Length: 347
View 1: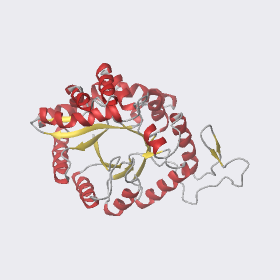
View 2 (view 1 turned 45 degrees about the horizontal axis):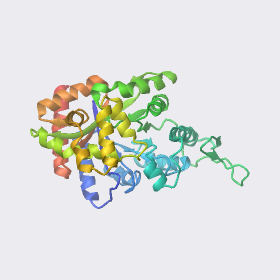
View 3 (view 1 turned 45 degrees about the vertical axis):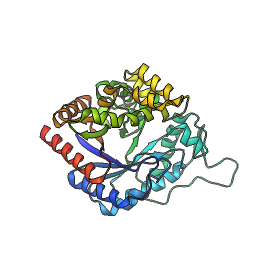
View 4 (view 1 turned 90 degrees about the vertical axis):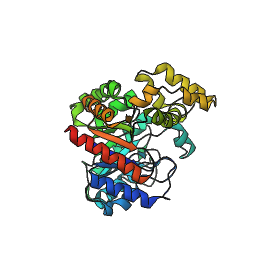
C-alpha cells in the first residue's frame, strides 16, 4: 500500500513555509509516495508545488484539490502543463467542485449543476492537454464565445494527453464520473468497513468506460495518531468532525454529512448538523459518536493501528492518505515514521 500526505488547509498561509518544506522533504526520505497541496480561501494549490519541485526528486506532487470554479479550464491546463514540466513528470492534477459557500461567496459563481460543470471541465481539459484547438459548446461553458472576436486556440505547450487527473468526489453521481473519467480518487469521509458506499458508484462509472475498479488509484485514510490515550485523542478530534458534519457546506447541502449518513450514521449526523446550525456548538461536538471518529481515522496504539491497516487493505484502498497529529513538524514526522514501519512489517 502506498501513502500520501497533504500540505496547506482551507485557510493556510505561507507563514510556516520552512516547516512545510522540512515536512515534505523528510516525508519523501521516509518513503511517502504523494503529497497533495490543498486550496480553499488561503494559499492556492499550485504555487507551493512549484516551489517544492526543485527541492524534491521522487515524491509525486499533486493539487489536492484545485477548485474547478476558481479557474477556466484552459488556465487549469496551462498550470498543469507548467507544473508537469517543472516536476519532471511528477505532477498529478487533483480537481473538485468545492461547495456553495466558497464557490458563491468567494468566486462569485453560482453553485448550480456542479457535476455538469465538472464533466464539462474534464471535456475541455482533454482538448487542452491533448494539444487540440479548444472548441466546446456546453450548458456551463462555451469556447470560443459565440458572436465574438475569439477563435479556437490550442495551447502553445507540448501536449500531455495522459497527464493523470484525480477527482475528489462524494456524491453518488460524481463518484460514477470518477470511475468513468479519472485515474484516481481522493477520498474523504471514508469508513473502510463501508467502502461499498464509494466503490459501488465508482465501479459503475468504471464499467461504463470499459474498465474495472482496479484501474484507479483509490486514496483514502484520515487523521493519524499513534497513542495509548485513545479516549484523549477522540476528544481532541471530535470538534474537527463536528465542524465537518455541521459547517462544511450550507444549511441545505453538506456533502460530507451526506457521505457519513450513507455509511450508517444517519440519525447521529443529522443531529450534529442540526445542533451546529442552531449554534449549539458544544452539544454538537458532544453528539459526535466515538465510533465514527475511530472508524474514519487511524487512532490507537501500534497494535490497533496494525489492525486498522489490514482493514484498509482488505477494503481495497491502494494509497493511504495520512494527516498526522500532533500538528508540529517533528510530531508529524514521528507519526509518519511509525506508520511506515508498521506498513513495512505487515509486508
